[in-house]
Length: 176
Image (cartoon, rainbow, N blue to C red; front, side, top):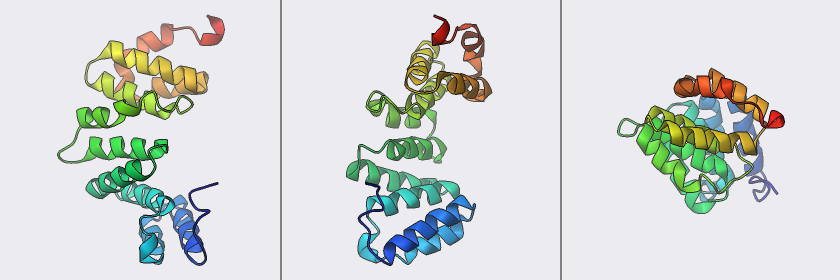
């Protein structure tokens, strides 16, 4: 069951239209579609997830943080809520890398099949010059996702540049 399934007509159509507009890169139209949803449903998790994506696309970091916080309260089991919270906090004027790390680290082990969380934690730890911690998070990301793809992403992620020699020298798990 998706976050959208509990919405009725016409609200489900507005949510789907908002998601479609966002996929087309038009966050303004996506936001307008969300406003057509009944006000009592604006706190619905599916609507909040779409609003989080929209506010991040618009680079409205304070609103993105607020929406992500609400989502983590309503649906702590949704990894995207935590990822969005960290992403917004990294980019907020009063935020930064440490704030992003602190937002994400409490759930670092909660989603064993979601490589984005340990990957992002590796990036944040690396930027904080905690290279041993960064390596540990990156190893976790390798274990919970497609290792080859994650290695490639890591070697293209400038946040992880201090770890590039280690990543290149580290044999894939299939060769260990």
